[in-house]
Image (tube, rainbow, N blue to C red; front, side, top):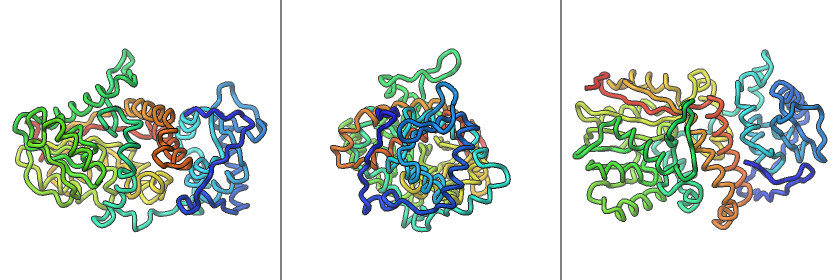
Length: 428
């Protein structure tokens, strides 16, 4: 995201304290703010960042082309970060305390080797600000619908502003160049989304007559493509907004006799299926319920069936470190979830089912490019976002979320896999 603020500008972001209480409130934490100031100096020096103070002043020189952290309200920034760590860092952006002319470049610089940001021997300081996820966001059967509602039921019109016409909200799969880098163009995004969906359906061997269960409908594009192959599809969602639009799209395509969408928790899935697919839904399940998730996959899979998953992943040690941490993303974007590691997926399946991973393909750089296209489109259409009734804090929240996610994939902190599982590892 590129801001248009000149170095001397101080943005005024109106904050509704009823809607955004922790963004409206600036904590008073002088000792922790002093620690945050020391940490900021260290990070700027170690990562080659340029910190700009009001009036364009810079405390220390930075390399040419260095990522820029432009502080409009340094005191508020330091007190928020000191009191809340990375949650405070995000809330400070939501409030307009800081900006960057290239948000992704700045976050990429910070996302690389995040464990080195804090000096060795001071990791215990995390206890001062790290919170545990609240119990009312744990993805129990009673809470899961509310968690999904907070994100996916915001507005179908909002998602249509930045997604492509397929309304696919997961990583695309682009053609690759000589260096095996994704060749992403905005016009090519629908084709790249279809390439991803088709590859997943191929992994599951979905064809004429296949009984297919999809866990996590999205807005119905995968169900439509599977039905067009001749499959008979049952798709489950907890989003009322997605349910309505997916059903309408399926009916408009003349596939209502082949694809049905149900408002149903995955734990309540019924029937037997030749194939099960689930695209970037496991991230919302939550670690305590991974055994239930895989047990459901195993329970509904017919003999000889195949499970094809697409999952965002992180390294196992990072997953363990973050598994009981309340993050900015959990607080403001995706409540109740946890990004798994590939190892965690394999272990959960092995311990609780007869399902075994027989193939796994990673393509994280493709997600970075997908997010870039979404972010650019979202930023360009900020007036339309406002016209839908979303305020400036919401817009900044989503700009940070999209840029933060893109940086995660660009640094390799995050990855995305398509995974094939079969019972007892049988591939025939």
